[in-house]
Amino acid sequence: MRTICKISNIHIFAVILFMSLISPISSASPQKPDFAFPDKVEKTAQRDLNASLAANDGQGTVSALIHLGLAKQIVNTDSLKPLLAQVARVTDEEKNPVTRALLNALMATMYRQIYQSDSYIYNERETSDVASDDYTLWSREQFLDKVTALTDSSLKDASLLQKEPISEYSRLVELGATDRIFYPTLYDFIAQTAISNLEAFSYYSGGLRVLNKRLMSDPSDSSLYPGATCAPLGDILRIYDALITFHKDSPAPLFLQETAVRRFIDGHLYQSGDRQNRYYAEEFDEDYVEEGSSGNGLTELSPFISEMLRLYQENENNEYSALFLVPYAESSRAGSEAANAYMALLDYKRKFPNYFDINVVTNIINRLKLPSGRLRIPQVAEPGRDVAVSLESVNGRKVT
Image (cartoon, rainbow, N blue to C red; front, side):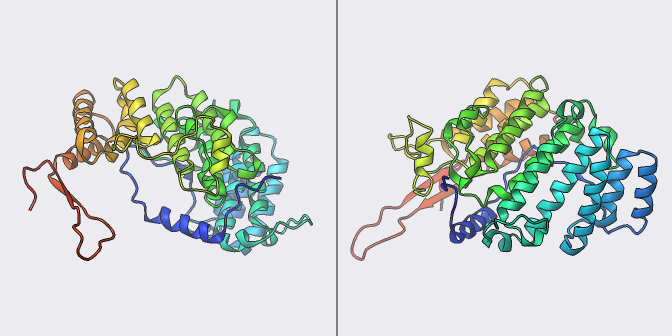
């Protein structure tokens, strides 16, 4: 079996530290909807569960199970064990496929929360040859197998979920102001829940930096998806592809997913200097070339930003093209790219002044107008030798 996606704990720590230091990009993207977890566990939930089961109230059943033992920001692995058993029993007895999908998604979320609460312990463990239902003895791989199986079950009846408007599930799902536009169906919610649950495992795997750069221009090319040794990257890409296919005629959710999948790919894209995973990237890319200098002394746009620019230019007459324009413009700091982004933002604001998040566009315009300077000096200098210093001025005639 190939083990190209195994990395050391030192690598894991470095990656987590690096990710925590990255400032989030201001984005016009809405927040993903989540289960409506209560602020505290509700004492009447067991009574509500019994009533909902008796009335065949699917939403009420799932809501009662959530209120029975789950609360925001609280993961008690001891109390979750009997609750998981109860959710599993209710799921086995449930006949409605939509309710079963919600219950499976809920269980996957619970197992993911348990894994994350003590991931440093589970990551250290070797997978036992003896099967056990006691998750306190599991390894990372066993948690991932369980979450993946529940995810597959939750999405099994996708065609039914796609017919269920998300607006009818406000008892279960926390909906933001624009969620009905960007996540219009129950399928969107369950698919996004699946992605979030699987992503919790994706930054541990050595697959962190194995994805082929050609996926950026064509995320649907399954021939480039990594295999089981790099799980769950391939599974996540397949869910994104299904969402994009489903929304091919709906610009708002389509553009959102087109951006999200490329951001995911960017987070796991092979980078030059990563000897751990280099041959994996080369194996799938006969035209593999080290990323970096363009050969003419200019820094090229990253694959992600290049794609955002391309997608914006192809869809600039649609108001939801801001989902592509904002990441591109956010990356523009100086020179011709900043000027191009500035003009594109002005044009967008003129055409779509009522866009739901137009303030983000305005803020970037204002930032790009500000005068700034950039000083570059060598990291190492020797006594008695001249030091080359470059000073760049943006939107200013002089820098003091």
